Image (tube, rainbow, N blue to C red; front, side):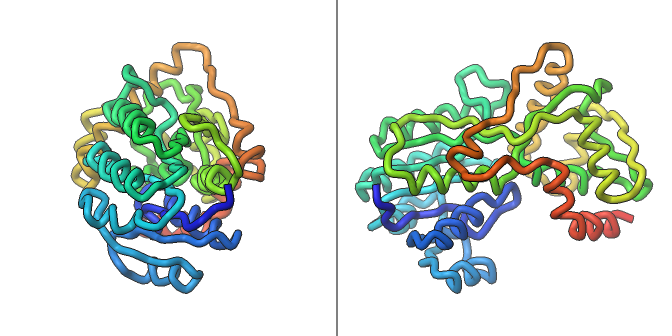
Length: 308
């Protein structure tokens, strides 16, 4: 397949991994035409326009704006934020993509996608995948684990001025969690959008590193050059605090279920392993968590100063 114009959703970058922005910039760097679908025109979308993207604004949940965005493109990158509306947005995009004759859609989902997945959002992901496959638009699924970027946000929001990290991770800090850099996820998505052939319905689990909670805290300590102390709190305490800080109820519900699942991993053998897809399809070795933190060091120190 010679890539035609690619519709990239979330192209300005949201509050999670900003994979849409990475995908748009990487495609443009390859000379592949991009239509950037953004929620609003602002400085971020104007930067994409300067890089050569066609920029259109619209609403994921408005079928008319989705149809306008999809008209005339050959492939789509679909990434919906962790908030309400995933299945409505999926249906709108599936209809618009089928009408436009799209031959490939790469959608970003969570690592675990099944009818019995441990969180409601993961179960919605499974349904979203099925809808895209039924649409007959060459759907391919990128199933990413927790982003490094999300850990950064969690530490910023849950760190006290005294350097205490208050999270519901339980008392087994040797429990291991699968993580990945959003940039690596974007590289794989770009590889799938640009390659000649991908079997419809293919799924690519993406894990960049398997690391313990203890190692995560230590990596933050080394990067920031300060002592950090973990304090276990209950799910209810964390939920109340997250909602008070403005987090969406949808995201809080998902993360609360995720923490419970991760605590359970401490009691059983681990089966996670780093995905070779990041290198074979994305073209680069997975970025480590510590490398990510070092790249974000200046921003992390600004976050810390604001907390103090």
